[in-house]
Length: 168
Image (cartoon, rainbow, N blue to C red; front, side, top):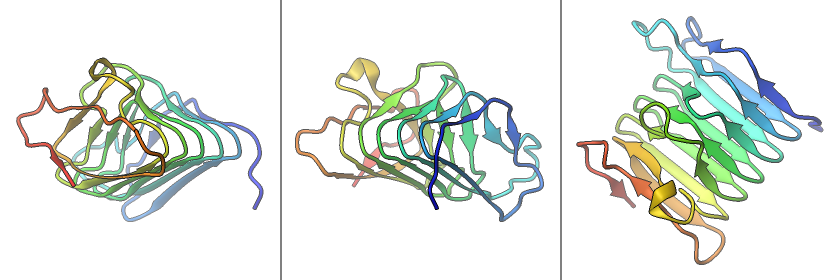
């Protein structure tokens, strides 16, 4: 299947009523998230598996949230990934990124919060930029890193969290 063109999410996607379902967004070019993807009826977690794929850059605007409510959250981007707020409520997160993973800004709370789950990164570039000033804000997460290039940087800031930061 040949994917062509960019994909932009310009309206919020409400996952209410999608229990144990899968949402896949695939872009042949850039994937841009201008609005959130989450269950807006928070009383009933949906455990939705979310797969985002871009054959170029994946960009989340600062403050945009993607929440799988306990399901799998997987992002594949052949170039870079700019993170707004990613939440999985105990579900695993997987990142396969051909470039760097960066912070879209500091609106909202944490950039990555797995709710005690694991965030696994396979990347070619840096995670959290090239200095502590651009670190990804993280909470309640375990981390696993695999780098395809030597000398990659990892900058994570758990300073907002009282939970431990565990890196394997």
